[in-house]
Image 1 (tube, rainbow, N blue to C red):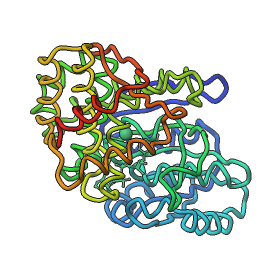
Image 2: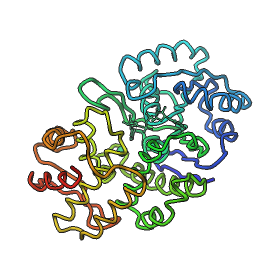
Image 3: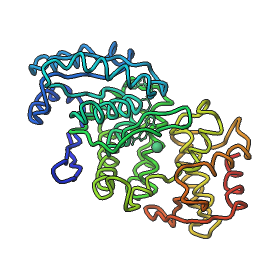
Image 4: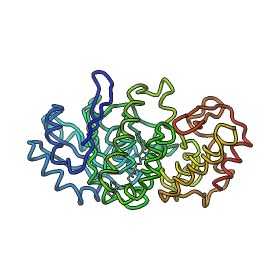
Length: 361
Ligand SMILES: NC(=O)c1ccc[n+]([C@@H]2O[C@H](COP(=O)([O-])OP(=O)(O)OC[C@H]3O[C@@H](n4cnc5c(N)ncnc54)[C@H](O)[C@@H]3O)[C@@H](O)[C@H]2O)c1
Ligand SMILES: [Zn+2]
């Protein structure tokens, strides 16, 4: 079991990671002293598969519980759904001792965090992430969000959880694509911050892909540690430190958007985006061809796509220039000068961007 602190002064919290640790959850919650009534936001699959076990642990710890099942997938992150959840929560909150448990992947985590941030101007919540992506990324750092028709994640706040509790056993039921999607973020951390992790991913591919608990605990621990440090230093993305977490994401978002958020899931699009960003790093003379190939091979090793299907170059370029991360009219991209050497570059010529997208087209 590992424990990692996100250092935010009085709002600091722990990330607890381990295998078969669920029976310790109630004791951790008791120590936090955040309430008596657990409002568990989740989806049907997770409630059916793990709900009874979770309930047993929480009730044994003296908590009263209510499950709130929300629709699977991104459509849960809507204003309408958030409204429904908040009304239901208000009915459950009779004793004024309520706290929220986000029990699911990034969708549930973003929605539950959002609800926690606005209900009564903010009530405590904990993240119990159940996807690899959520354990290494979305559950940590306090970004909460729901979507509008106009775009994803447009409504939300920075609102930190009181704990992130990453039970590795939950990952056993993920399908191959969901695992690969989380691995894209793991590969991202390795490229921007950790050459040892990069080599580990290359060398221990079989252990990781077959979900060996020790390997998972290691990579989740390392990635959580990286995110904890960055989110701790630049909580609200005001210092530019969080920017490097967007490696592969500007291209990735453009691909997701050009495909109408169908076809590629987030990690798959980020994998393609990391290849384009690496290729661009090479074209600007920052890295050699060998490293681009090494990165591409690692992405391929984890069964992520390395070539685009079904989106035209022009649509990707159009989406690219609508990305909210662009400052003014100038484009801005996270590239690399080597493993663990990220660099933010502005004002890159359109021709070069097209050539980089050409590599994955
Ligand atoms: N807040 C942040 O910092 C941040 C960062 C990255 C992504 N996100 C958000 O996260 C979301 C994507 O997260 P995600 O990839 O976890 O998607 P998700 O929450 O939609 O989960 C993916 C699928 O896996 C299923 N699932 C969850 N746990 C499972 C388990 N243990 N076994 C089997 N199936 C399981 C879900 O029901 C869903 O069908 C997006 O909405 C994105 O915007 C937020
Ligand atoms: Zn991401």
